[in-house]
Length: 402
Ligand code: ADP
Image (cartoon, rainbow, N blue to C red):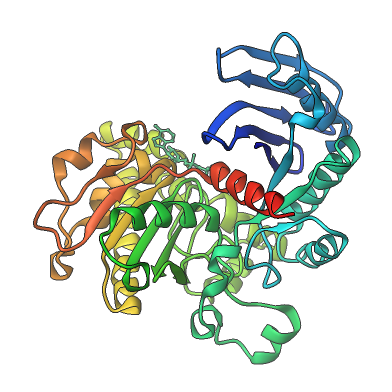
């Protein structure tokens, strides 16, 4: 089945056309600067043919019109008619407590998605524009929503509740939701295939480390805890986000830096993490380059992230009463050996032992790589993530069953 995977942002729309019969990407691209002026970058994968254009895109419907034209084009396209695009799968950042699995778009689903707006206002608004754009341009093509939060919906209440007063939870749905669920689900699924154990008995810690990072405890194939919380600000430190800290720091900063609630939120999301500690950059590659030049704050930032991940590994091992495997994925998890090494140090009490040389040589392009030594009681793997493939597969399964 040809499935168009759409990731709609407020002013951009990324896409991949999948052929699910062999899990290949046929074409991919980006509509950017929607509502400003508009650019389209399109690539056909079979022969690497690239097409780019500056076209006015007032909204997501117009962006989708150009995207479909590119897919149909005789020169750089890859399908011969609109009906060859058999289904559309959307990445959706927040499904609140309403969605614990992927769903077909219906009136009822759209009404529930509206209720998630409060939890991720910018993202949800963008997704709704993307869905509406597809309805305008391809009204007869079934659409499926795949949620970043869905995989985490199996968490027990003691893991997702905050010790605020209960009214706040009931009135405003303040609780842990987590994020990156599609990525955690993909790598946990791949790891399960490598473990010689019945799924129900498995205990896996998945570390999605990218610009945003989260860590999950996956017991018996289901998430029982995850590091991101009510928002993606929680958990380990990230490119520009602070991660977990004493909540009393928030009002303290508001007073000292004279910030209002929006400003302190922006500060914690945009000025902290690697950027704030190193003073160099939010990007791990720049941090590594600065360390090579002897920058101590850059070195501290890597040590801090490694230490924080290690503490999550320890606490999730306790939460699951053991661990069979630890998986690293996403930009940093796949490519940055120093972060993996810092995260895996001093875990000998748990029987966790990694191969320094293999780890140092492992990059995302190496493909699935075992990092643990033969003596390690716990399997350690780098597994490149593939969220789009999960979206394409879920979409196919739901549409085929119609
Ligand atoms: P996002 O959360 O935006 O999807 P990514 O998963 O692409 O982020 O991760 C981005 C991070 O991965 C950056 O800090 C970047 O420095 C780091 N990284 C390290 N090496 C590479 C690499 N070879 N390719 C891509 N990202 C890398």
